[in-house]
Length: 389
Image 1 (tube, rainbow, N blue to C red):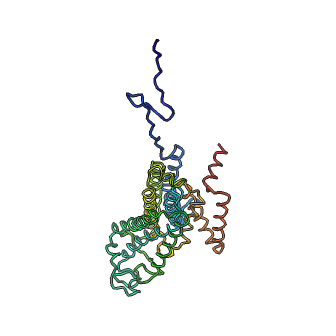
Image 2 (cartoon, rainbow, N blue to C red):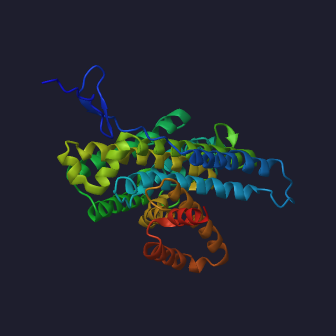
Image 3 (tube, one colour):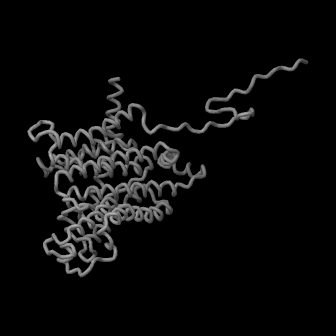
């Protein structure tokens, strides 16, 4: 019988033939770009507004011009940018990993305290008591710096503390929490309890953290006067640049193979374990990364507002961070940034016009978003954009 010529094997969708063989091998997952073309355009537009338009409106336009950005507005925007960085860090663990933390205000405050102590030591003899020690230590009858504030007169060491203190605390806490498989509402409760415990500790006068008043009355940063408009604008620009850089880093994480595992842990952690992955390692990495980002945000926040005290660790502040993310849209990265701007912009207006109604507005906003916009403002904007297209 005449031999029947068989056609060469054809790779099925998602498969390709190995070179020089007829065996089929599965294609590697396609590499996801950081942003689409439209996303890069939006990113460039945001960078242009934050790093060019606002500084030009502050420096080049006269005060009488309608588009002039006042020094107060620059400071307010710088503070909100720090909040947006915290919201972005919160989205990494809540939106993409499914870990709701109600203690991120602790990492934010620890970074702020590390920077605040450097600023206190930079005052020198210009304090009220003209002493080598900060005014609060003289008032509380301290004779020397405690060991943990040694070398904080060097900016590099203080910057190292900004990263290491929140990072190490998150690493140790997360190791024991995730290894014990604590998750869900139980994890949220213990993070809030941890934050509250640290707040009570920092309120004590004998711990070297300034007690109820904290650190304030800063004079200089790296030898430059801290209250000048030029320094305020420089701090704003650094905050904006760090937010843009943190957004790129977060986007790189969530679009990588690591990001796919994180979302798989969020959606079905038990299945991830059955596939041979250890969720503890992945959760611990993103949890520590999120804490470090919060610490840097706190360090940028303190010189702009001029004070850091234990109230930054209050559980209410950490809950408010979760509200920013929920309002903007968790699991989107851009949404929490938008939520931080919307909520804190409204807070700035309410606390001036109707301060007694702010908490009522915040609670109502959270309820309405939960019921009517479970995916946040970003989802609403996307639907509107699709309808227009």
